[in-house]
Length: 73
Image (cartoon, rainbow, N blue to C red):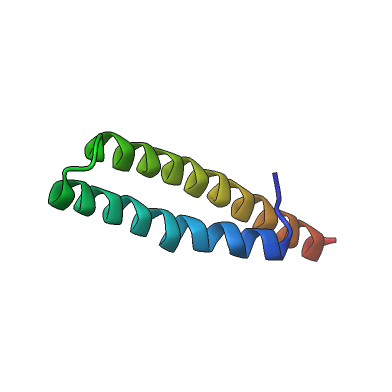
């Protein structure tokens, strides 16, 4: 799976910035305001973020392999 540059950049931003920030925000607010399932929701967001990071890593590695393979020809 290789993403287009713009898709990769957007997903990378989501994985590195948006999802961790959302998980932290909800966990913090749930402790302050007594919102339900704070730990469960934050853990779910983190699990999705981990999966997204793994997919991005695979995509990046495949892209690098393609670039190195095309240079050898």
